[in-house]
Length: 111
Image (tube, rainbow, N blue to C red; front, side, top):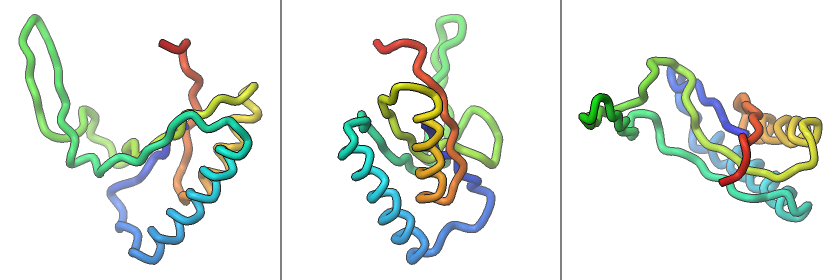
């Protein structure tokens, strides 16, 4: 599950961030207690990104995201649940906790 953040809008206040961190922490604790937690993490804002491309044997590195869009990947959870319905239930809890859209996508196998 990935967190989508519209970074074109105003940044949350410190109080809003603290409230969301507490709510996300509670959901994380619930996931761990139920044994579905694998990994989670937040990401720094998109302007901290470096994009690495290799084309025709030449490597280029540029600042910022590849796609110019206002919605950016802000963080993610990796969970192990039995089916899509269970994943969507957790996505609902996560969306409410962090007040951001959550995209649910299964792995294409595990490496």
